[in-house]
Length: 235
Ligand code: ITT
Image (cartoon, rainbow, N blue to C red; front, top):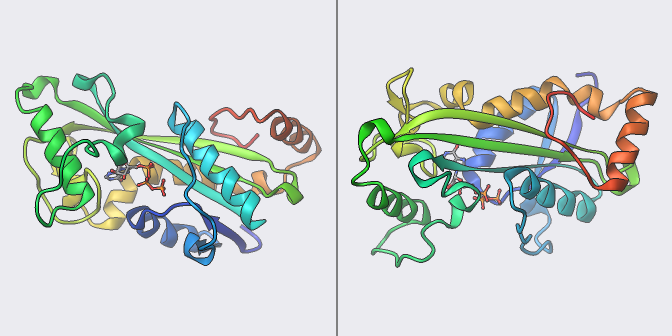
């Protein structure tokens, strides 16, 4: 990457920031946090897919800040629950009361383990999914691109490990035989849905920012049509 690019990371999730800021900086992308824009209120994520919600967040932040923005919409899909909690992963247990001292992540895990308590080992397949959207501000043409990363795993019956965030303690990487929370940050990024999406994004980053004439035209059309497919190559 030739020039360093300044982008806003459109997330309020500190776990995501920890996992994204360092690899982005190493790739020449200077990250500005949403805390630099306290006037930006809550963004309503009312899309029906990870892709749609990532675009909703990235568009809102690019529009408000006038900077390139990157958003991550992610979650855990459990086969035995037909893909739930999926796009509702962050708010999965909002219908359950907190136990004393419990965090939102702890409560989500407690609900999921309880719902899955009678599900046999063979039926405990699951995956983390991450869709990452990058959107240029309107003054730069508003071009958009979404990439997807997936991490296949098994749902554990009890927590293991103290690293990471969210559902990491109950997600087993079957090839490593360790939970996501038993991995150091770099090990997790090498395997994870977020790491995979990020590597795809960085591989096409320069082309996305500096498209040739054909790509520019396609990007302009795509931005005005507000349609954006997930792909390995920037549109
Ligand atoms: P932003 O929308 O501000 O980015 P959020 O936490 O609301 O923050 P999402 O709507 O994308 O983000 O929800 C993602 C949820 O999925 C997150 O809160 C975790 O519960 C779970 N999740 C995503 N990635 C994860 C990971 O790497 N490890 C564990 N849990 C993860």
